[in-house]
Length: 551
Image (tube, rainbow, N blue to C red; front, side, top):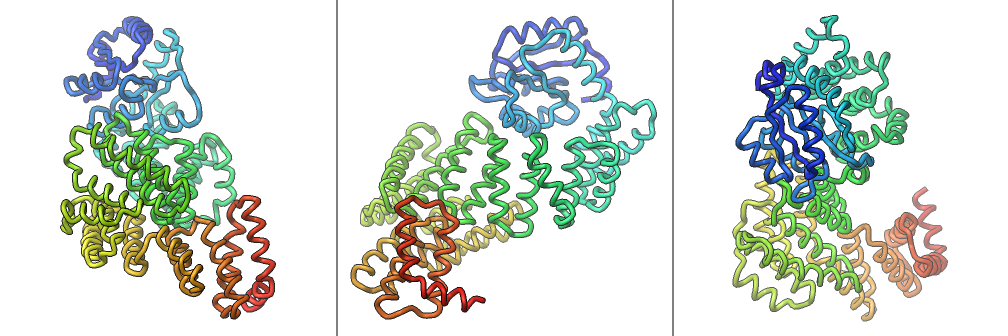
């Protein structure tokens, strides 16, 4: 696209994506009066993408509620990915809704304008020339950003800022300069830049840029009060949570990163990459419920988008199996039944499901194992699954899991060795994924059973009065599922019996105190609270000794 195109209204090519003919007619009338004639209409995303393959559009106007196949967020995401829309394209969103989650999702795509339905023809005629004027005037800066030449973008911005005729564009220019400085990792200069801006302007993007620059320099103490204020503001809290999540990831404080990214996703749930980050952090922090929810969210929001894939359905199945293996109740049965239906649906609904034959076989085998049908699972694996690693990291992790769950530790170790090599040679794998793989390797090497198996073993050991063995099994189960509050209650039960029987060692007394403190952080039912209170009462002397030894 050339700058001259934006000055010739008769030559402008416009794409309108909306499923309402009234919107098409109103915009056509307004554009006709402006002198814009080359207009294409699409009622759905599929046709919009086909038009983009055939034409290069200067202006794209897209409704957020394109319901027939994709919503506007996913459509614009795909257009950007495929290069149909760039910084030089005039991008305008239409929507009748203005709720916070929708607005945050739209802001992420950085449109040039957002028009609220019902549209007013006079307002359209007023707004479009203004948007075109900005795009035309700052075209060279947008072009530099499109090709990721951020140094050139800064140079051009500084030249424009010296031009008194461009005073009304100064804020847009300043914003682009700040973003370019951050892209170049010039964090100290970016900090000085935003500090100077804050003397005159209090817009949300100024504060966010300033916070980003300081977080990248690990100057958290300087902005704690500002962060508190920004997470209270509707216009900044989403982006602030996002910045904080990345800050904590870089410092390997994964629990806090997980807390922050979940807040960001709750506010703007449609971004698939952010949901993927939630999933990765949930895996690393042993939050099996969180993994399950994150994979479900990805599958839901990716439906009919460029991200849509059988892999997402497969990930829901895997997360369901992982979660069911941590539970020992009716919910485990329900999840396994649902997982069985999901496997059947995946085989039926996806034409290319045959490409995932081995992965689906592994899922079926893991389902059989979870239902205590070990011989059938072994037969399935022996017939259809090789020990040879494959390309996908998650496929290899799941393959290692099934061998591990079968007790075939050598085969599991071989695959995990391949996974470790895969991670070390893959520059695209983030820190969170690498840490998760390291953790998974370590746990498979040390712990040879699933959490569910360990809990069942503890019950059997307890019945046979093998209390030390029961305690050891529970401690391993708790390591794998630290968010399962039922395990600490069971640990206290075993410790109470051991205390009455032969007393507790110093480490066991400390363990009792640790369990009590862990349970204080969990919401418990009235019955569980009563049970824990009884255990605490019987262990009161032991707990007092443990507190004294710590201090």
